[in-house]
Amino acid sequence: MGQPRTYRIGDISITPLLDGDLDASLDKVPDPVDRAAAAQLIAAAGGDKALTMDCHAFLLHLPDGPVLIDAGTGVMMHERLGHLHARLAETGVRHEDIRSILLTHAHKDHFGGLVDAQGAAMFPNAEIVMHEVEARFWLDTDPDAMPTRARDALPLAHKALGPYRDRIRRVPEGGGMKGVAARLAPGHTPGHTAWVIETGATPIVAWGDVVHVAALHLVRPETTMVYDLDPPTATATRKAMLQWMADSGAVVAGAHLAAPGIGYIQRVEEHYVFEALS
Ligand SMILES: [Zn+2]
Image 1 (tube, rainbow, N blue to C red):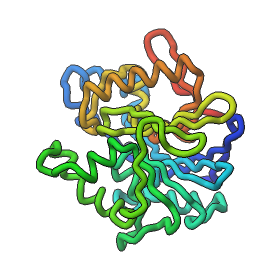
Image 2: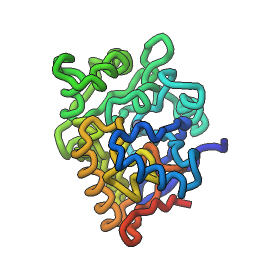
Image 3: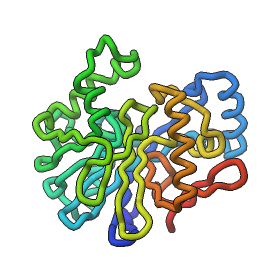
Image 4: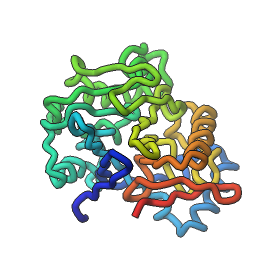
């Protein structure tokens, strides 16, 4: 794996950090009609390897210092993942240099790298910035009122966020920091967030998990997988975000898009394609 590459978009530099990859499977598509359609799309896209998702975080080089969008898996998943810390070191940016970590949402493949194997904070000087809707859901909701899938994920959320409890900054819609604004993109989680980054040219939209498996979701955005807590809302968000990206020409930075995870979405007839930056 080569040194992470930095892309210049307008006034902003952004470095995708590949944490590793993970496998989805068709049994994660609960609806039988969707699953049959998905099986055809995956076969047409080359078979099982089309179900493997890259897992990215993104390093933003902002005028006031480096900022991360998401933090990789750390030691919370399997050995093909957890490489964010090595990738970060290769950029020359130290963990103590990171001043803010913007979370797209509170799932283990996005926050696991916040802590080490002992549960201690990896980023001594960083604040965690979350959309207030996402923070409220994971940190304030009575577990008994949560969907089972979210309740089961709660211990890891507490493990990752607990050491940062005094430095979690909750932001409203449009909040964030100079040049970076939170935009709710709900459905995958209630407060799932796209971070919209001003560049002086076309914006960069770090959209988290709007798309999991490109071979399915770019062709058939209504395909829902069990990862989405609220499937109808996730579908509506996915359709709206894809159309927005295609219409605006914004640069998308997608957690699970194929490496380098950054590029453009184009509409081609009735579906979309991802064209990675070269
Ligand atoms: Zn994810």
